[in-house]
Length: 433
Image 1 (spheres, helix red, strand yellow):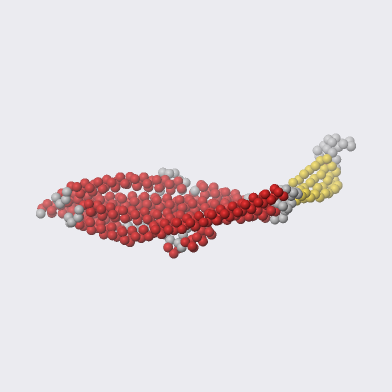
Image 2: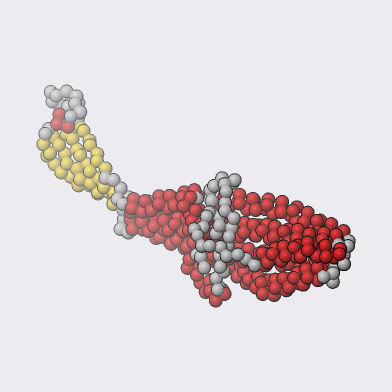
């Protein structure tokens, strides 16, 4: 019995270390609340991107430029002043050549102002306002697209980091299992094959850690690119994912209605339709003439001697040309409406697809959390206890370890998948849920 007593002590110590490792694997630790560092959660990344992304800044400037074109679009053109000097060689009198108004035969001053036909200025302002709405909506669309990419990349970053943490925890657990196997081998209770297989399992995990580290660095580089940072810039380890919205807030019909009201791409297309309609009205107004009015005083010597009034009208005789322009404008209205309807149908279909995928990911996570994971934990505890008592082969213990590892990986994958689907839904809806 002495050999058994010699191996019992190290076995007990290894068993205690194994229980500590297993407890750390199965239970999370509380983290004190503090300000999030860049990369720890999605909100810090979105705030950074909103203020620093150069593409968004460019689109905001374009929208501002479009807004500055509204007032000039409806303004009157600048008036024109014409000065005509007649008989500058002073033919018929004793004075010589001169360019001074008081020393020529006659000087006529004409001040003219062009006046568009009634309603044209307002329609031009309406067209310019539609352009502003398009530019603003395009800016919002660019932001929702960028936010979706950041949310998706963060979910992948979280998945890679979570798998890395899980693999390290399992690796630590297997190191403790190896110690138990070594202790049992030293006591002559099992063969050396158990310890060797535990070492091989750890070697495989270390190889997997290399791939996971590469995956995490790639995800970090993608996030930095979206944040307009250097690809190698540091990012904090991701700590948590956003909570998923309640299923009651994800009703397909209600969300489809919100898509038509809030989606920035649809808003841009609606503004395009309004602009095309106003442009059609403006084209029809070109049937009516524009006016050019002016007054002109005439100067002889140093005195104004006569006053005149002039009215100039363009005559819209080219009706064939105007009808073609009107038909073109009307066709553009039809094209804009068809494009908006096609986009709405596509977005509605995409929404249904993403909602189904989100529901599947949510159900999978619930299944792993409520059933598979507790069963795997119980199986692993039973396997460890049975192996320590010599009632279970090492192969069964490895299988239990692999099962809990796969279950936790699948749960992480389902969580990340749900976040990516939610990001797509929020892009389609045009706002956070």
